[in-house]
Length: 145
Image 1 (tube, helix red, strand yellow):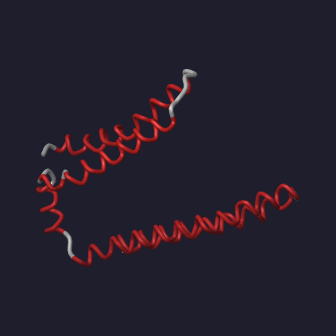
Image 2 (cartoon, rainbow, N blue to C red):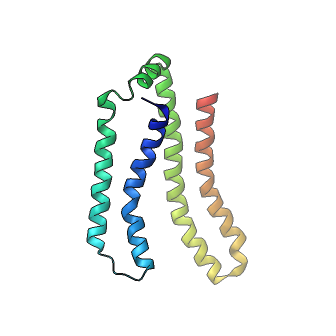
Image 3 (tube, rainbow, N blue to C red):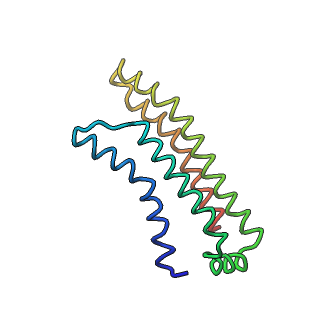
């Protein structure tokens, strides 16, 4: 299959998912009423339509030449390396979300009561965000180390 088609097809499918949102936003901007149930239903139907298309496309053999190249180039160790990198980044990001989710509201509350607590509050929020940076660093070490 042509490389340009393989590049453009996902963009067209993402556009198909986003069109109901853009239509709804345009109608809101024009001051017209928006049927929210119809808009959400259209978005869900377009999402699952794209999901079905993207699931069935590899079964047609459209990506066969790329799949053969990937199968010959990668080993089990390479696959485990990519899974490890994905887990370290993903779990680090989840940990950051949990840490910042607890620290940021407390920091906002502390700053609202005492303006001088801003620097201390900022440090606690930044410490939580550091977990994601460490996860990303481990991923880079796994992939390129």
